[in-house]
Image 1 (tube, rainbow, N blue to C red):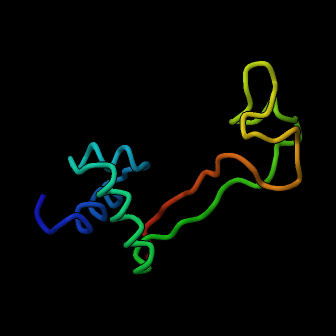
Image 2 (image 1 turned 135 degrees about the horizontal axis):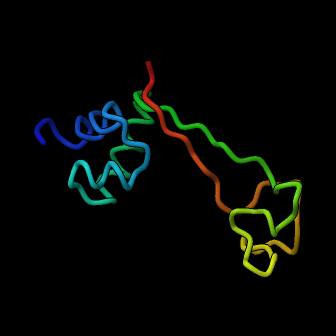
Length: 96
């Protein structure tokens, strides 16, 4: 791809890529270069990032995405908390 990594990442987003893994596959760039490009585009205001998780689920650790098969917390917490812990899903989108 011509135009450098920032242009390639923007083009992948515009083409419908929905994850950093997809952008890596589409552009052929290393994951580190893709992550650095996304970080730079965020600082420039070209890409917007929005956190999509809020605290522990009401169903307890067994219903949490980071919970273990036996229902224990996978985030290292001693149990459900009102504080946000564990993985945080971030939605990236182009700024219009």
